[in-house]
Length: 274
Image (cartoon, rainbow, N blue to C red; front, top):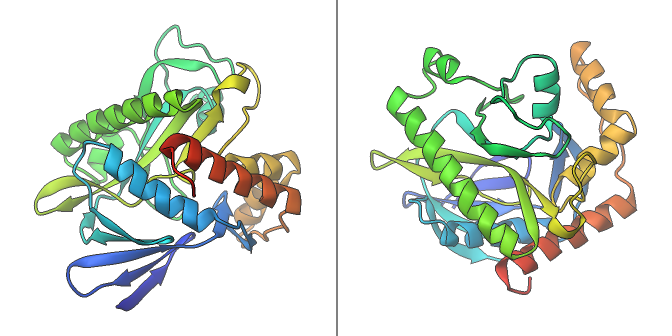
């Protein structure tokens, strides 16, 4: 087994037989900033969520098996340089982009914070250090995908979102949005990477209230704390000045809340004990 690289959350190893090992850590990042603190149990939750979702979805994927409580084995494939984002609610970066005229929405869309969209929308981004939203025209101009691939990715991503939303609803949650990644395996577009609370927004259905910040069971807990205390602006100002943002210390209560909610989300959705 050969070490390849460390990402924001997981470490990758080449198994030497056409497969990779993903080792999920307790590391956390937000707004493209890595933090020194870790979130206990996070790696275990991400690993078991990946296994759960890949097994639940009726879509070809690179998933082979879970190797340990924090590791999965996947098939190697050539990743498509497009992050496939599906949004079901008016929330997150979509709000600011719409206000700035950078995002178009269908007529009669309710633009109250956290309102459910008329239909889920496909809102892809580039796959880079700082992801940038791209239209279909731009994605084709940049040769990120072919026209046929874009159409398939759009339909498949929305279909996956709808299925995951139903499963979340049955467990008492709302799936607000979702980020998926795909690659080419044996000439076929295939679902890849991992799927878990670092890749979507999950809200508690019983406390959902339109027009307000939602009760998050995902990484949004950390993002909300950062925004509330002005750190998001500090990060942006640092980058605009050509400097690397400095990560603040995450309070113990935020760390504890993230662990508790990650574990709760997994156990409610999967029906299994972590």
